[in-house]
Each structure stands twice: as C-alpha cells, then as structure tokens.
Image 1 (tube, rainbow, N blue to C red):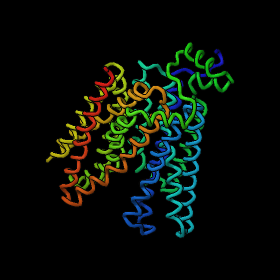
Image 2: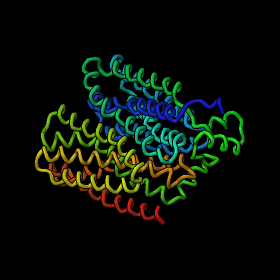
Image 3: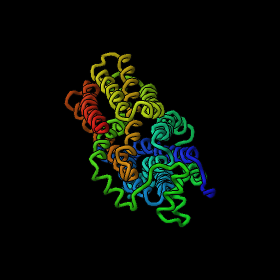
Image 4: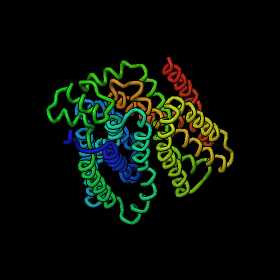
Length: 424
C-alpha cells in the first residue's frame, strides 16, 4: 500500500498539465491553412478540409483511447497520444521548411492533411484525462476535479490566441512551429513526470489480482472501478441510454464551443465590421471565459447536482444565443456573448459530473463517447450556420444563432429528464 505513487491532487495536476500542452499543440494549424491557401492556390473546400483535420482526429480518437484507460489507467494512452502529436508537429515543421526554403510544391497538400491529422491527437488527451481524474476522486468531489481539469486545459486556445499573432509576426511560421514543437515536447516530459494512475491501476500493474487490487484501492479512498476490457467498456457504455443523452448535452455546449471559437472571428468582422484585432480579442474573451467558468461550474455541480446545474446553465446559454440572434448593437452582442459563454462553460462541467454517476460501470467508455462525439459538434454546427449566411447574406451571421437557441431547448428537456430519472 505504501508503494502507491501520487495523490488525487497530483493526479489532477499531471493530467491537466498534459491536456493543456496537448490542446495548445494545434493552435498554429489555422494560420498554417491560411498561409498555404495562397501558396498552393487551395479552394475553400480544400482549406475547410485542411482546417478540420486536427479536430477530426482530436474528436474521434477520444473514444477508443478513453476506453483504454479502463484497462491500463491513463498514463500509457495519454503518452501515446502526445507522442503522435509530436510526430505531427515535427512533420508539419519539416513540410513548412521545405516549402518556404526549398520551394517544394508536389504532394504538399496531402502531407499537410496527414500531419495535421496526427497533430490533432493532442486534443484527444481530453477524454483520457477525464477518465484518469475520475478514478482518483470520490463522487462528491468529481465536479470540482473534472471542472478544474477541463477548465484549465481548455484555456489553451484562448491564451494562445493572444500569443500567436506576436509569434508569427516576430518569428515567422517556421520558427513558431519549432517553438510550439518544443512546448509539446516539454509538456510530454512534464506529464511523464507528474501524471499518475489511480491506486487500482498501480496495484494491478504490481501483479495483484482483481479482488485484492479493488480492496486495497478502496482502503485508499478510490470509489470508481472499471470494467475488464476496452471493448467491454465501450460496449457497456454504448448500451446505456444515458450515454447518448450526455453526448447530446456535450454536443450542444462543447461542440458549440469548438464551433464558435472558429465562427466568432468571422461574425465580429463581417457583421459588425470590426478589425481582425478586435474580432480576435472578443473571440478570446469568449474562449477564455467559457473555459475558466468551467471550474466554478464543477463546484456548483458538486453542491446542487449535475442535472440541476445543466438545466440552469443551458437556460443561460439559450438566453445568450437569443441575444446574439436579436442583437442590433455591439454592446448587446458582447453582453450576449458573455452570457452564452457562462452557460456553455458551466454545462460542460455539469456533463462530466453526470458521467460517473449515470454510467458508473464504464466511465472510460462513456467519457470517450461523450467527449468524442460531443466534440464532433465543432464540425456539424458551422456548416449549418453558414447556410444562414448563404441565404440571408450579412444578416445571416446573427440569424444563425437560432441553431443554439434550438439546441438549448432540446438539451434542457434532456437534462430535466435525467433529473427525474435520477430521482426514480
């Protein structure tokens, strides 16, 4: 028992640190796509596919890798994802060097797609860390722990939105990639040093059988225990109807978060004619607030329950989205964006407070489905909002927010159902 390494706080710190660096790894990919649009004469469809590649792998890899946590703990899946991301960033750095300094053109687009896909694995560490942290903490502290993990880790896009323009202007694209590659390598080393598996997994690794490992882990305070295999974890969680309801809730707010992080710069620039700098600042305000408020959302969920927190936060989201839909002044639009950010961030925390409670026999599998398919909203929502722009021109940027009003109403109904079910 004395050989167990780490504490819940250390487990939370290590996972949060790793996720922050993993999420930051793809921050440069958007500017890369914009740069290569002109160099390679890419069509809008080709640019769209290029930008989507990191988010594609970052969403879908969450499912199997999160379920893998249930068999080995989080360290091995986490490190493998980080190493894949390093290969992706290294590959992108080499391609950029060859294009900028050796005039390479043939096969460049295909290489960018490939290495962009690999670099997105850093985003997939999210659901691995969710499972890893869940096994460290008791139910009564799940909201705080998971809210802190996701809130701090998700700050990466907002923080780097401030740093990127400076880096690109002062250092150029290639040197910026080298620095970001260094960030990711350092982050991987730090995770290796600080990321710890929960007691059960450490005891299993030491050779204890299932029964003894569970007994000793319980004596050390661990409450949640996994199913026996990756396939079983995914299967068990997939058979649980609650998993799919939670996917919808997370699709609405985290998928929405991913979508709006990409959509808002164009909204502010095209609808209110703001400069790129101010559009970026207002987008960063949304991104950072949505992430940071997630920590408070976890604390609230611990106190009043995940379902109650979800209902309240989704109502705020709906109000904010309606405000953006109706806004005829920049002041109202900014206030509505803030309300929207608070609602979405708090609900993101509430959902993962509910995962261990509603799918307790397969937390890793459920976290994979919820985190992966929920994040897929980042792909689905922008094209739908784009259709409003196609039909209504500039006014469509505001009208498109009706999508979030509808999602909020549907999600409130689901959260209320989960609340009634929990009481039954």
